Image (cartoon, rainbow, N blue to C red; front, side, top):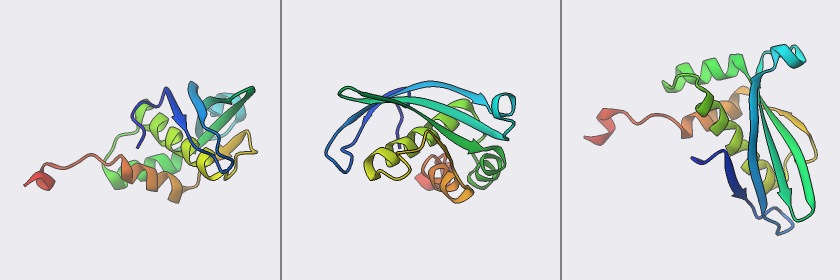
Amino acid sequence: MIEAYRQFTAGPDPFGANWDVEFRWAQNAISIRHADTVDVKFEISSGAIREEKIIALPLPALNRAAAETGHPVTDPWCHRIAAAHMKKMIESAEDIEKTLVTLDFQTVRAYAEELRPETVESHH
């Protein structure tokens, strides 16, 4: 899982290029798109190519994944989920042509599982 979600390199993509990824902002999309999501915006660049990508995390999916994994919904948690998906998009070229990508519950849940806090019992 990506810890340094504010700035990282992803790749190579299917064409062999590496991409610089930079976190730009996150905001509740109710105010901008009338959507019940947390939008996380990244700028990606490789050579002369520079694009903006927004990963939309539906609030119901975040709340359910948080309840199931025991992690509170926090800004860094949301940013890490979005960054992990941005990395996957670049490396697989899945949805890379889209500017706005809305994740489904199963995808949010899978990333949330990767971020699950370790329990004290697991260390015994």
